[in-house]
Length: 201
Length: 222
Image (cartoon, rainbow over all chains, first blue to last red; front, side):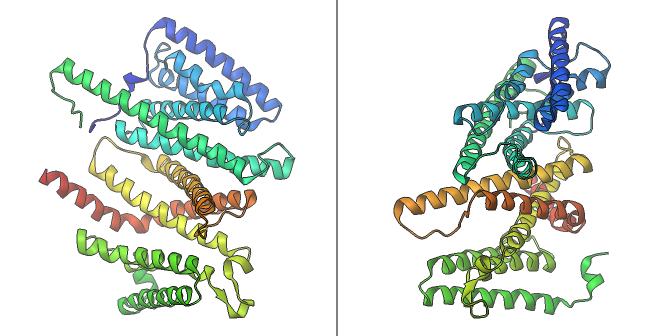
């Protein structure tokens, strides 16, 4: 896979998709503002990042239709409806998968403004690590918030390890899915152009 | 200007520091064996193996590390091993047990090495292919992600070693002390990572270039 991650894999250019995405972005902005007013900073950060990655390609290329596919954006927004981590293993895994999807869109957003280039394999590696890192950052910030503001946090180390396990499972699951998807896309590209220009290695 | 010219320490003195630390590691290994403490002996043995890695890289791949890098790695390993030994000056308590800061020190130091390795490898790959380009700001964020992710994996490893040790009734070679300790580990890992990301990257260009050359010659041979 020695080529740059093609942004087309994660961006659409149709008016219908763009319309839905922009509506979702509007909703995300409302969520972000209300989260800010309630001082739910993690929630606000998540909504802001999701809204940011959804519209960055459109802003970078100055065409309002160039946005991420709206179902993918919806997947990224799932943790907003889950609320808290550490409640059940399953919701933690789902949240982890969402974060991984968001991580991939962050890569696409940075690529579309031209500040970063990655190969598909490196993007997969990056997304796996970013998902794990989010769990770590969440632990540090929530523990700090619990210490200073008495907000809820897991009670025992074992509970924290359940969250970390969920994050690791989600990270590697998402990484595997992305890799399979990329391999299929590259193979499709190869078949289309007759093996010229791109290599599947 | 490299750190070596600034500090005016001769090559022989630097190699001497590494040798002394290695001898001390052997001594700690001996203490572990003679007192029947598996944890001390095991950690010291792993540590000795890690201190051999720079020499191994040089023999096997002709990658020559700056002696300061070797001292850095050896020191991290040595301080961890030293921390497990009961010391006479501390009423035969270990440094890990007797002080609150030893664990933080070793976590920051070892994670700095993890981040340094991650940076050197990523920079080498970035120089090697035109399709990967992170840029300085994203690289900084990437290194923080790297150290946080590694910290999470490390805590999971410690957790499973504890679970395994519990299941099979063998002594724990790594210990999780509790929720607060895990969170503090992650915080001090990140501090080590930030220090490398801010101050360390300039000193890692040399080793990274050698890694890049290896990648270059490998793909040329293919």
